Length: 492
Image: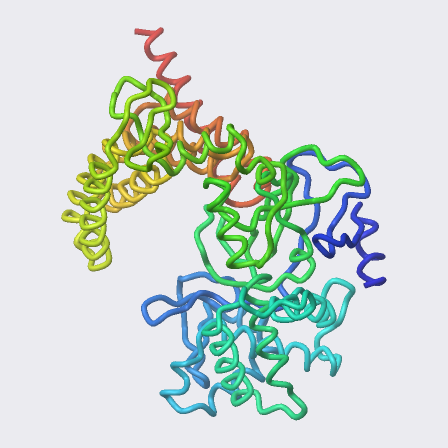
């Protein structure tokens, strides 16, 4: 790791190792909000292709796609992306073309990424693809494997599901069958699949929509915090980490691995299941304290049955009901259970309608779900928020702009409460609100929303990407439109 350490030094970064969390990335100088801390191209990556949707292997675009005529698995949008990928795909293509049609269907994006991992290692060993301090297989070998981690701590492997271990073994056998390389270790392939599970990153577009998966070995060194001082975004396939707070010299750089809009117990459960560690960040250290209990009850708990009360509920000592901590009113446990059961039945129907494309019926069902949830959940509930997000998605698809704006505005106070000031999801929600307001002629409100979006997203996304240039252009156009309307009124 000496070469990597030397490569990080000019970037104002240094590697360190801590007993409780392993390798960590530290700031060797001060970083300020919006500043790029580090960026990295993927060692390997794949688009999220399926039977219903395909993307270009080079840029993840969905436009002008043509399937590789030899392997019939990989798609490209044009010759430039094909040339970019050719050194690696030339070998992959030969291997995939040998598979029969049925076996080829088993080649999922995850299988492909593992095949590409070993082919890239082979090409780097043969000096066909250059090796650098931040681009070499040694960095992959150094990544934490849940399997080895459990063995090192002398655990009984109970943290890793036996079915998952069996799946890794089956996938490793398929990869071995495809590669047919000498001296390949199936156990190593299985171990690398476990590394993928807790080190690979979902590659997203500027609006955080999933495009593919990539392995970024240096970015993976950055540890998790539920209150991170940096954010990971993608510019194409390039992973970019930017500071969202002032990071003083000698401080650790952190990002969030999971959705932070959740109770401490939920976050801890997700981190334990997927990453096999218990978070000890400043938020998680408050577990069990009054403020944490209150926040958890608001985010995932129930509301007072008095609509005029904003209190949160906790279980009674005899567990027969829930007591409002503000006014003392008690909600019957059976009443809540009945409403929750009705919500579950409607949710199952709504999901089926939404999946089958029956959006009008899905819209009616989600509105009924929202009505029931408002009866039982706190106004700042994450559960209610997710229903609003689903309603917004459907209304946008149906081009019901006024209703969509009304729902979008409902989400804003919850986003402001559950996300820190410089969170990309908050900025994107302001942007969505602004676009709807502008579309409906509410120019002054659109300017306010666009301005709030810019204030956040210039920190998380920078200002030079096409996405940010478009946002800044919309803000200027909205301001020009407002100025024109004002001058027209004055003239008349």
